[in-house]
Image (tube, rainbow, N blue to C red; front, top):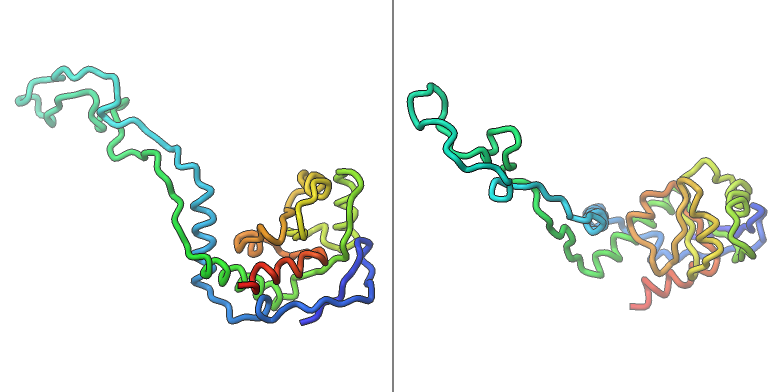
Length: 210
């Protein structure tokens, strides 16, 4: 498929870019997408949750009352989870939630997500540009010119650009990444993907040069 390239003012440049069918027009695999997004969210979890169990509570272990004859259940320690201030039964412990996925499956998931965006016509290609200074207004003006101010946007750069990254950092519902770091979650989480012209060959080299 071919997409007309526009500049940062929103005007057509007369140039077109051909998006590879092996990236933007494959047979989507929904289960691969599910696994990749699940791994991405799991890997973000800190896993530092912890609550004290009865062995870690500093309370008396003195027998509270006699074993029989009170009419109530027997009790032998204030550390019991049954009492207020007692230890929690089977409480959470620090753990690692991350798990492994094969590289080919992750690639399939990302290509499937890109295919869905291409089918929805949610892809824009912008001519290569630079920002002299990191200014939020400069970035928001570009989004206004592209008529994307009211949408959740993912901008994909060919390589890291500090000025563009810093300019977009305070803009809500916007994220800037590079073609080498593009992942399934970010693709699906965005309403529109803006590819800077130079990022397309980088993306093709990443997924097709196997």
